[in-house]
Length: 80
Image 1 (cartoon, rainbow, N blue to C red):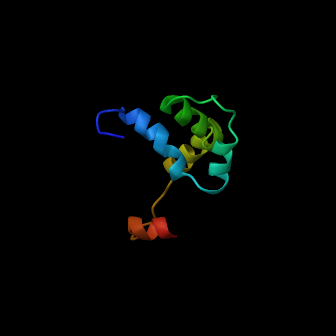
Image 2: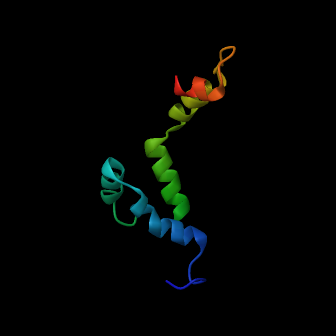
């Protein structure tokens, strides 16, 4: 593909399968043909499958409740 022939979104859509492995690659392989036709749809479908709103909400709550102990560096906290 020559530079300028495809948009960034088209390139992301075409390259996305190469970024997957394991169950995520299997999931993509078994999507119905033609069910996802562009990067926006792919991103939405993938995120709904692997990062549903409930999980995102849980992770945001976990992050906002972090408490770093006195005299402990952020690195030490993160690694513990």
